[in-house]
Image (cartoon, rainbow, N blue to C red; front, side, top):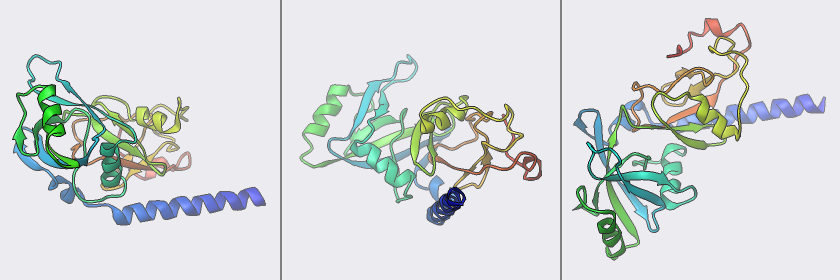
Length: 235
């Protein structure tokens, strides 16, 4: 009846949104080339952010790691807006991730500077925007997970379960049909790689290059069908 028709309409809308997102997505190679690779799984890139930037900087707590980095991207701020345009809407350019090391402000080296030095450079540059030069550890740094179709974004550390991002997107703890992904009900398909991820058991490993966000769409399967689709195995 009416409920069935409404359900079918929602499914059509979801399929249309997924199709539009796939059409938008850059290739993995294009994402790789958005940053300059300098060896040791590190990448350097610039991001132009309007003032106020909407990021929080802190000195790295590790004794072996000098300098400062991004500890928070403020939700709704200018950096967050850029992140959403690049990561979700697939606009060109790079974006800001928690854990990025700050190397320069408008071309002025501040790798060994203080946070006050950065505040002075930003305040006195005479422009409405700031060019940040950032360094990212592409294999050990955190990963930005985007859960579609709502576009909920969460930063997940390596070794953490993907379920942390899924639960953040839904605003609470989730119950799964199984604990090892066999039932297929929690499956998500990644936008660029087309890989299957299973939030109930998959973890974020060093395999993922975090220059590219991990954008996943719901791809549930009926119980019993999952064994025929060669899903990405749990790690």
